[in-house]
Image 1: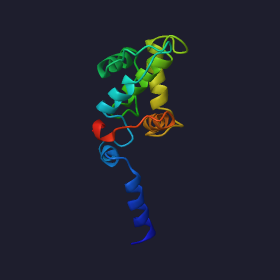
Image 2: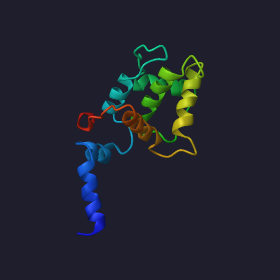
Image 3: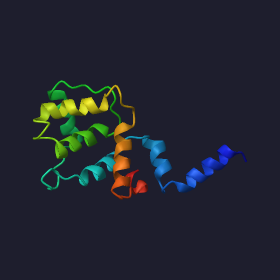
Length: 138
């Protein structure tokens, strides 16, 4: 067995249960279940539980405002739209049309990369000591 094979075995042992299967299925993107769980934890700026936008509502907001996404996969746009709604809508993002542009700016950022939003979410969970039950997200 060479060093690379040993490293692969060691890395596999460090991965939480279900992580490899999730990544093989969805890559670094939100599944419906992962998005619902993540959005379910969101609070508004005044610490109230967020009343989230559904996928259909997000798509309607984007369409109504003429916003076309080039780099959307899975439920990423739903997560980003709800993050925007919870954290910025009514403040620096003044209305739904600006929220639609925020979603586009984040997902289609030319300096970004394909899995940026999901990686940030995972790092936020780690920083806040929130375990992800990967098997439940499949």
